[in-house]
Image (cartoon, rainbow, N blue to C red; front, side):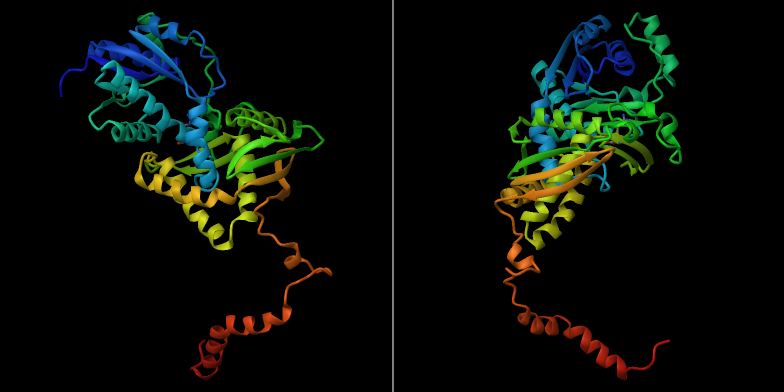
Length: 405
Ligand code: ARG
């Protein structure tokens, strides 16, 4: 391996990545270029370039990826029904391949041999960064200082930062590790590590607790076109706006809290809580519209795709041929997933209260028990006889066969 002269670092401006920046620069005697993606973290990115430069970066980039994130990562996952282990909408997992793409492209543009990230050696994110980077550029070198360096605690990192005059805010340490973007917030550590402990109120970042939520329900109508949410209450929104809007109204009504013991790829079971109001509402509404518009066989097949899709995303395999193939399947199914879903948000709950679609397969004349019924009940007689024939045959034989105990 030749020597490394330039490194592109995924930089958040927090303690870890600030210390990494300087540490890389000194260890490799290399230029470090920082890359910060705006994914709707809910914090201001103002001043972050200056901070990187003061810490020793040779250049600092910020890129607004919100639109691309929603269109090309969140939306396919929503339409595929991807919820890891049936619950987690994958906010963190979906962001990683996009950030990595940004890193790799910047490295190529800047002629950097390596990229670096601040993920620990125990989590999924290291896998997502590195598998994606190699899928996009098989030659790129990946550096993961957190897995290798000499520091064993936050205190040691702070001491190093002070010694090197690295600008850090030594604020009251939050007990939680938080990762946030438009699609949701992932929260772990602190007292959440005890799975029997109820998440303390300060662990939640945006959602009201149900008891503090308004005592009057809020009704919303979400419109979908071919599986894409396009409007709320009769008004059209871009995907970014729509997600922001639902995050706000959901959070105000205590909707979107998820508490999960999940299986990490590295073999650890971990307890994480999530706040994802828009994701919870949209998955629920989307699924509801599918119930109305997809034929039974496709509807029953879809959860198989959803399960595999969510595993691929969770396990860092976004850029796999299978994910693309599953997108094609999903695209085909979504042609009829248009219509409006009405929901009621109330004290931590989101409930479906109505749905309609130009492609609805619900036929009231078939379903009704009223006068306009057109279903031919006489035809059922032969159908039921043949449907049950095999069980009837087994039962007849059973009479003759030796007694079972
Ligand atoms: N468990 C989630 C995942 O693997 C989130 C990981 C990051 N969580 C955090 N609190 N920093 O996708």
